[in-house]
Length: 363
Image (tube, rainbow, N blue to C red):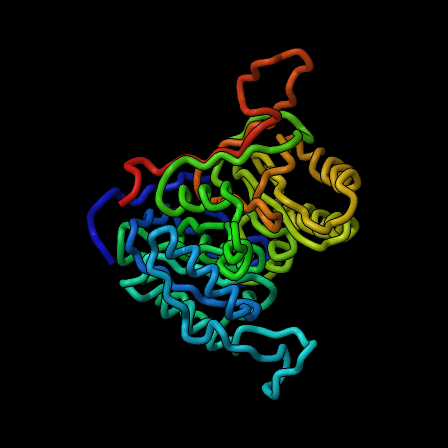
């Protein structure tokens, strides 16, 4: 790993707190350090901690990373495929994983601990990341994170939310939530805004994500937390649960979840106290999640009583336009409906989620 360059930034946040429902108090929250920005020629390891990747799509996505100037190498087990249950012949039509839990964990750990690798990029989401968590040597991962003033990047989205939460809490590093190689990056012509935001997040630069409408106006500041709603809910009560959202700006998104299921998950997080003291909420894409009007009604009913700004329509998550977020980084949320006759609003209307660029730029 290179030394020198810009120093790693510290994302100041609220006092450390144990994760909700974390047994034995194992979930210590470290002071967060921002990951080091990439430079052209840096090596990134593409691994598959969840579902199996299509080989052609994975290669196309790696080509997109190489188009950004990165040296993308694929993990040993990234193209493996096994069944969910006991070992045996792979069955067509059964849900698969990208290799055994221990093998997926080994690819992740080897890449994170390899000083030649500057970023660990997850090939795709799906299901399986939570099963990897118990197979990781967290002391070794922490030692690798602490070995440099510039922690490397963990990048991915969807099911990778489980890794974001655990890495943020246990290793004290910011992580990158955004498009993946076997996902939209594999498209013939990936969305230009998607690539531009990914470049800014990885190489350095401010990131601004405009919303489409404010469910509750206001302004909030704090470290960014959150991810895919179903994964945040699934982590409650485990040793890998994210810390409560007190003092933080929360980002939420999901895919193929009916409005009643989204309502149920929000209720669970509310009843667990996870939202207590949250500074603001940004809602991303909710692809194939039912009637948007019904979703807005659910969000307004469940989140409105928190009394904090709520901005909807942020282009991040599972939609065709997937901008990149640095979880753990300082964020500013502005949700302000435009007055009917104001042609020059003070902020991008009806609001935006803005993440500060680290001072000093790229390494």
